[in-house]
Length: 237
Image 1: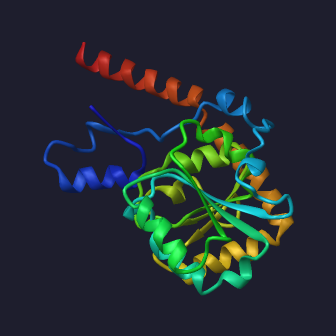
Image 2 (image 1 turned 180 degrees about the horizontal axis):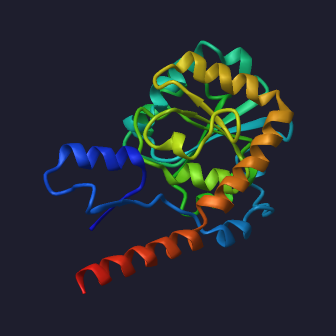
């Protein structure tokens, strides 16, 4: 039996493989350990001080691999045309990857070193969510990335490209913002509008936590997985 993390992955395997059909695959979305998240929600690791981020700067965060898939290079290029809009912000890129050197060089080339901060590889990314105000995900393609569930568990506002199964978790304008794939100008416009809309940020905070608690808690996942195992065992028993 096969498990897909979302309907997009489900459809892909049905259409593109000869060993998966609708009788031997089940959709079971990724999940998050909410109890583990709660240990970090109000934790202060002095990360603003460590990375020299002034207290009056809003932190716009990306958490993930610095790879072509994540769309960071084109995002940075687009920001270079809009940097005046983000004088009150810092872009915090948490993670490493094959494009890390390319990202660093591009930031320097475009004179954006005052705007972007790269943390490099981080063993524990949960420490960073409390200081992030808005999480952005400019990915070119995805399945259902854990970073979405993690950020929502922390009650963070998210602006994401509408790719993969992300729209199965984020309902546009209810618990986050979705932007048409590859529309970087609109993507950056939505970040700009959201950062000054405290009412919407609070709405997303409340609704994001509700979404995770209702549908993506690891306890719910385990119950569904156990039920699936029971059905398979009875069928084959």
